[in-house]
Image 1 (cartoon, helix red, strand yellow):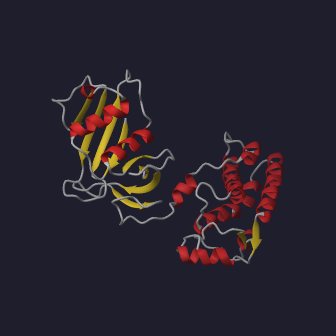
Image 2 (cartoon, one colour):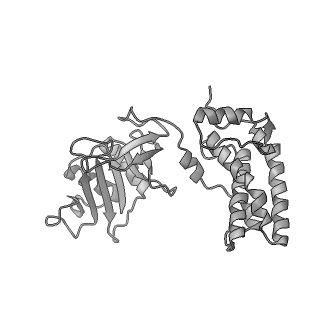
Image 3 (tube, one colour):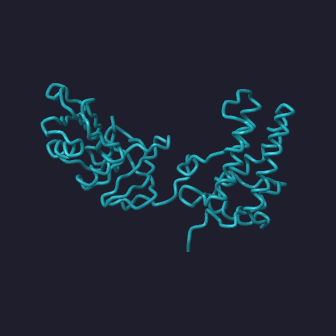
Length: 292
């Protein structure tokens, strides 16, 4: 079942027609019923839509929930992203749908004029409230109050490959020391990959995220020291290689750019006293700086 959140919805008959178009089935083969309704449903329908109006007092940004399910015999089965876009175009409202990045509070938003963005959505605050949109990566029609900003958790969740770490400390490592070393070493490699590849997926990376990566680097010496001798030598060699890549991709500014950005962001991670050399270096292009 695909679940969609919207700020408004049409009547059941119009939703039936919209879903019949999307799945290419007869209108008579679509059932649209309130979630609590049981008796009058068409249990033999090819496509079923359960709806719920969460905010009868008009509290919250997203007050309608649509759950859509297609029977096995339906041949045309649009993916959730495609169906969200179809609903947005026909209902003339933004439609929110589950994002595939593994963060349940982040939703993919199908926009009225086409295109998509991501938004942070909060659960209803009470029985008479809908879902609230806390922030989005782009303006959403009809929601001018929603702040437009970068979502750090989306950037952190973006998959960044770590082939060098994988070759030395595979994901199947089972011992505690190996897991700790892999976590720290892969975090350092991910930062190096981000540095050389333009900060995927948005070309932006907060100073707080950057400082978290440097804090991982702080743990590496102790983490590698706990490894068996042969593995420690391999991992130490990889660390030297990654440190060299980091140096080649950064500039020494005595840590001024990062410290200033962390103060601006009111970040919880700060450069430690007696900080190591990598805390004194900054990316050649500051990924946390907005274009002028």
